[in-house]
Image 1 (tube, rainbow, N blue to C red):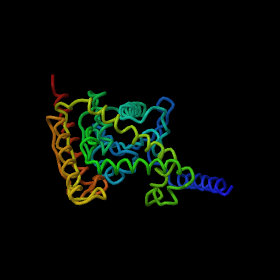
Image 2: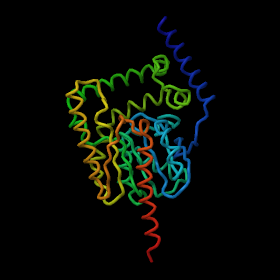
Image 3: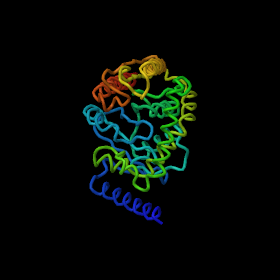
Image 4: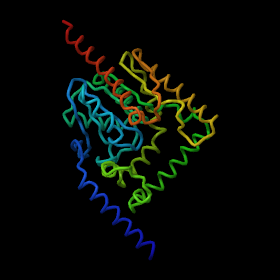
Length: 316
């Protein structure tokens, strides 16, 4: 009986907090109907070649809150919540990168956001934007990969890192189970401010994050089969290898950093018009640690895309 009462109290606490957070912190942007699925997108700024920001695994538009205002000074830029995350409705489709890319394409077109696009993908979002470019190549003018996942990373990192990833999945599954009863809030895992709480602290986001994690291997396989990018303008940003990422020994940390940097170099080989930049003093979330570095990379690719548009328009 005590357990039942605690569960009911927790559920009431969670529902009241969710309603309060969203009442007092308005959602930026708008909701777009995508075949009966409502998805959240926030576009700011003006200019040709719209920049589309895709977040890492389980993340929402919030991860771009520092970089987007800077990019909006010279381009139209859109961040969004993948289906089931943040303000977007859950989807019945598996959370693989191919499905995510198709849903993003439908969102952009249903929302009247016309190509060409410059795609920016962080971490697992790198899979999403590469699949998007593979499926809709004529609509993509350039790409920026921000410490992007690599299709072979699960096989190439050390067993110790793999064990940490499996432990992270178990923790995420526990939080998914307890999220409806307010566990994430009580443990302080909803972020540090009310805007973040309103966007990310809800059960469907916890559940979808786990679904994306479970689908990671399939998303990696899909991305590996997507092929190269030809002569598409591409900039690959990677984290500072001197910044610790895991709770491992110094030797294992260095081994991981060396492997990760090698994979980032390989990502830069996807295009004949690419640049690989190591961003000092940044961890995995470069867009939060060093938003100016992401902004300048996006500016570079946007300028290349605009030059190409001008050259194409000038042809007789």
